[in-house]
Each structure stands twice: as structure tokens, then as C-alpha cells.
Length: 82
Image (cartoon, rainbow, N blue to C red; front, side, top):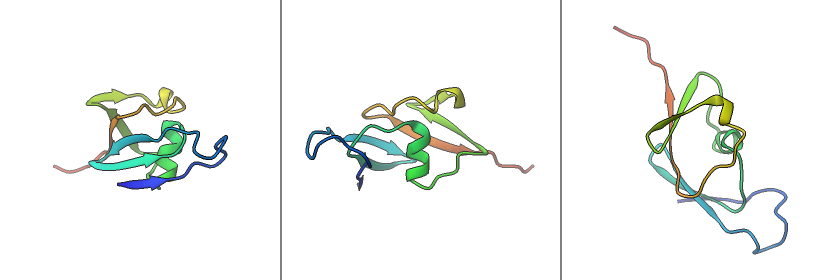
């Protein structure tokens, strides 16, 4: 499990960790963050990808919403070929 601290948390020990799974790997964050911030923090691309949350497409228009506890997120890239 990867544990990341969030910048600007209000008081030490006051935040409840947020655990999520991204592409099969568990991550825990010390403070709330948006989907876009999650991708940036994990150094995942924000362009040319699609997201699924708990098996359902998660539209880019919602990427500025907070990540929910326990979400299973898949970052999908398009592959060309025949």
C-alpha cells in the first residue's frame, strides 16, 4: 500500500485516510483530493486516458470531484492495432 501525505491538511492527525485502489494497487491518502489530483499525485497521465470507477465510466467532466473512500479506479488507455 502506498501512503501519501496531502499538502495543506488542517491539523495533524485530524484527517481520516482515504483508501482507494488504482489499477489494482492500493493507495492511501491523508486528506481528500480530487480525481485529477489523484492522477497527478500518482504521476498518471490526464490526457489520452479514460477512467472507470467501480466498473463504470467516470466522465472527465467529473474529474474535479473528490475521490470517494474505497473506490476502485481503472485508468485506461486506447490501443491501436488490428
